Image (tube, rainbow, N blue to C red):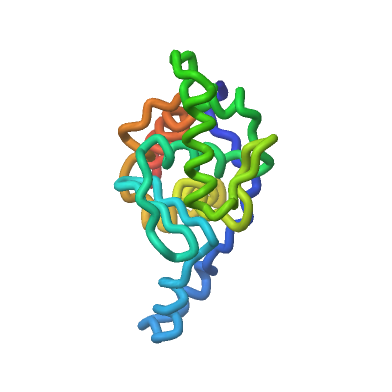
Length: 175
């Protein structure tokens, strides 16, 4: 695995930081815009995880949240084998266990998770990929605003762990 996570282009709708900087007090319209869902599926994985689908919270197991994060990192999709490796590494967990979790997620997401390859359908926003984009664009204030804690701190997924370590190292070095 590489030292730096690969960032695939995600269909993110970003707020204009210039617009936010110019506006002194926020108008009602601006406040409402901040509360508007950023995408059909929103994944907040920094600090205490929370997932919202179509504006409503989903109550997921930690493993399901990990699966969504991994799939969000791979918008072109993953094979079952690649998803299993990203999630479990060399762990002795059967692929059928992963299939069951994905099937349950597909139901919760109203069919918005395809197979062959496994990928999320529709618009997806994650706090950790937006934070990474802010870092790449040299916007430390925006990155700090998004950073609410480690990426899925209890995750044992090798891919999530790699992202968590990279984000923590970069955040610690920000001016």
